[in-house]
Length: 493
Image (tube, rainbow, N blue to C red):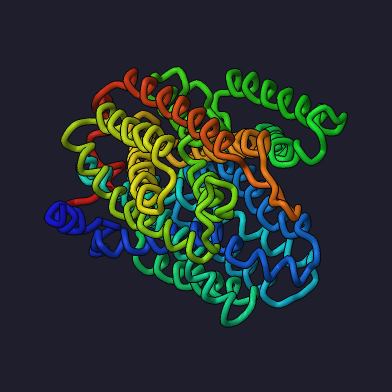
């Protein structure tokens, strides 16, 4: 594996007469950018306690999480398309600059509305991953690109781990403002790295235009849907506000699809879903987000539930985070390894392998959830399988989509993943709340063993369905046009 990684880092990228960029420098710069985006996603969880003490309301603090996800999911596809048209490197630099601005705004005030504004600006960095994938597809040979994309998925895991662990250390020794200061530093450093080490992307603005009607339909509909998913239980699923927002979101989606089918150059080309590779990859992504990706929610609650519940392991939040650390490390290694497996065995069987691993992990935890060792082992297995699946998906999408729509197509997949992750979290929360137990002195209720087992069985079924869907994926790329570097800007070694 180490030899293959070294081989991937060799060579350089042509960027005009007399100008070349080492592959390793391009990958390091993109990896830093993706780690920054993932850090900003996860860092807020390490500061929830301090933020509640500062602003006095868990509901208000919850909006610091929600607004980030809303902005990220609502703008991802638009940003991906802008990257395809105006240059992915150029758009990424803008996102990183906005990330610095948002971090500085949030770090410099105690006014909640202003902190929320800064957090919303940070949400734009959630679209960095599709741009990274597009840049890898531009600058690396088709033989090396799968490992490069896998490295970006690993960077996502690394950034999440840094956000939780490093963010916790900052909060413990400084304050919640420290995590925003750190994110500003990360984003600024990544900006310089991308500016210095990543070749300029080809632009296509003379041949394409922005489909503004699709922009106006897509962003509000996604944001409305995510609001319904995240707040439906609090508002009430039959509340008129919930129902109206859901109906408006669905109608906007229908209008968007109809418009896209009748527009020669749509923002989101839904005709790509006619390709079985794109359809299956997105279906597997949705099912994985709905099921396997809920591991953090289920396992952290299982680890921290009191011993008197009969199922909880009674660990502190810090100890639970450390228990989860090995799975994060597994995720960092799994990404590049998946790229190497794709080169040898093709997309289908590697995706099926990932599905089998995550399904097996969830089945095992049903029977073995009473010890820390069992939880760590099964969590590592689930994480390995999940990362393998999620690393295959962008490779499939990049292979199937036209070169000028690579970032757009992967952005749509990311939006789908975030939406179904939110749906899965709500379903799991309802299942866990369906059967609770309280201590003799009262207080908060915790899920019983029965509730945990039902949740695990449901997730296992969803994972099995995703694995079966992966069997319908074509095994290897078949489009000859995608077997060579793009437009003369690909890797030469």
